[in-house]
Length: 560
Image (tube, rainbow, N blue to C red; front, side):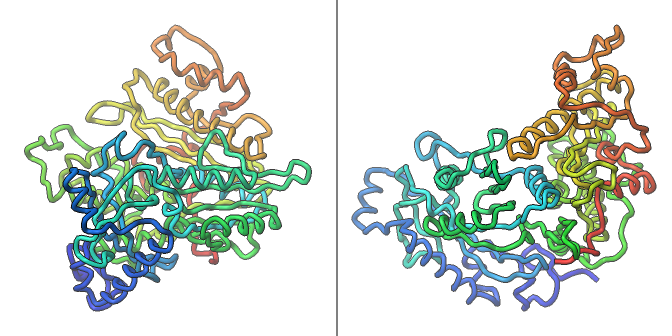
């Protein structure tokens, strides 16, 4: 039975049940919803919060007229309304946000720096894996109204957004950074970094979102990973953490949300003895399924995210004037929703989503059908995710806190431009801390060349992760194993030259440098044991399951 549709979204349950209604696009739409009173309360709370932080000054009418006479730009803003979702996928709070329309700002006049501290998914997974492996306590922090703490260096004015404004035509001068301004993220990062350094933290040079505080004598450590206004703390120093929270409380409003359980729409669960941690996105997958008319509780689905026989012919790609604009919007919206879990907790869907994303600009019906197949597979396996464990030897036979990598490539498999597909997965403590599927940036002349391109990209990520671990106080004992199934690639990496590989690009010499420095070591494996194989091509059911079982796990056995 088809799910009911409201404002273009398929929703579950009665339209009068506000839990399953989509978020309103504007204030008029919000006022027509059954939960309109909640949106009014949230808008009043947002204005009260901005007032308490002294984030703006209401201009008098004569001041506004003077600005208009001087042709000073007064920017517009929007009341962005979202329902906050918990780990079970249920809304628990209505949130209004006065959001500045930053796209109207002029570079070097209205703003200068725009860098925000956004930790990559690989860094977040690395901290979680290290935390569970090193026996650290992992907790999450949330800063309330983070951007509002950073002062506004530029002179900016805006019309107050509808619902938050007290009267029509209310104009504000911004006194602090506000959500939506191009420079807000950079301003908040600079402010928060100053606080951390004042407390004694040191920034990790390899990643500007990581900070560490160590006591070399007692071997105690606090690691902080920052994603804008959300942070992960991993530590074995509880007394110092308490002092950190007390210090931050005197400067900003920060909430200690306890053990890591729900961070950036990823749910974290533990086994009974706390030696394993599982990361999954069941609630998010269910939300995406509802939005695209798929039953989120479906038990059966495809056995693989992509049919092994799926292929694209050059003549299938429509010309620019033949593109179905409505279909393109549907495809982009669906693939955009699928790329998020594929990049965080579902490496088994990474190749399929990235393969289809190559054609998102000029899609046809087969692309949309293949994207729906990925979603149906995700729904049927919605409890799948990644796991890290604290075991002397993990499920692949490697010791605690040891990095190791599987790397593979598919030679000239793209029928449109004949480029190769690169895939690799880097493990630690039994789970993938980094993985990637990517079209090679250039054409290559042989399968060996393709494997070298993959090994080069993978080795650079491995070396960076090794440097981060060393900076955090957990250096690797020896070179990182790189599992490769191409003997010629291994021979070249080990500096065995031949006239047959003169065409190999000079830039891949960096692999030899890493081998000489004992950063990496290549290990030959059979193709049947190559876990990165499903990141380079669409596989049949048996081979796909063999790869997926080595990377993802079923999280239904874990507890909150």
